[in-house]
Image 1 (cartoon, one colour):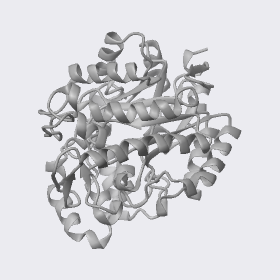
Image 2 (cartoon, rainbow, N blue to C red):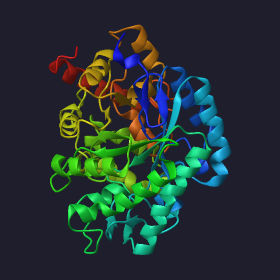
Image 3 (cartoon, rainbow, N blue to C red):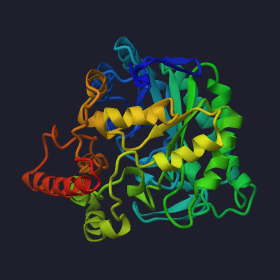
Image 4 (cartoon, rainbow, N blue to C red):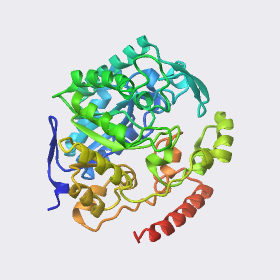
Length: 418
């Protein structure tokens, strides 16, 4: 049997196999609370054979919210989350929750205050001015991370994943692109790691030995002037020292290089279509300049593997989780054979929640996801959904998806995938 389908213990948690549903934001939490849609999706993924499914991007406090339909960890939602984790466990899978703070990627009408950041600035995407966090605000967010972990344990989660990448708050402190502070939280890499260090110390104190502690971080920010591999390896070593059980190796900056995170074409048409009318100015901006601000980066299988291997080589005694472009059983086996004991998948288990079961049954199984990124364009306004199952897709959007899929098909043939 492939090592992919053998159990693996991480911290106090044992998974039935090596697969994890990655923390791809669902947009399924109206009122910042769990919904039936969220419940049905994650239980379906669990039923589909996954080792562990991750509820995505829960804000540790109100100021950390970046979307109206984003989960916000607080005492009153714990009973509903417990129903979700119980249902996931009943299907034989483990449950994880990603915890984070968006920092400057928000708006006052969503997060309840002027968005916080490592440094002051302006968020073009909202648009809004950004407030440089003072020491009191830093202390409050650090405390919120610990409290969020305690709530996750109470809700029955087996693991937490701290989001320290993709240009959100911890990443904003780490990256010289967004951190221009002159105090003990800015300047040298050691200083820029101070906020992350304090948040992780609160997480470890709250959760070590009770839940598996994962951290998602960048292998690189994906643009000139951001973090590169060498400094990111130093960050990973610090996370290991503090007490992280596993590190998820991703990359990119949603405010600067979003397609480095996801690959493929920026979903302009879908994003513009689903944006609310009150954001008419943003609709026009995305339509006219979306592809310029967020240029496409061609999709290829296992697109983070080359950089991820550098981390594994530098830190052979750390558990690294691979994520990025796993679309076939052969891809998954290659990741395991390359020394990564666990792997995460997002779009493949959105397109088909039974993907893991099908990989188990057929060593040649391949995901039918065509990477049009329609799901990503829709999630910024509504919930994430594949175009194949989306009931509100229009003929015009279907035509656009078919066009993108033809382009992707030609690109895959050139890469020898078909």
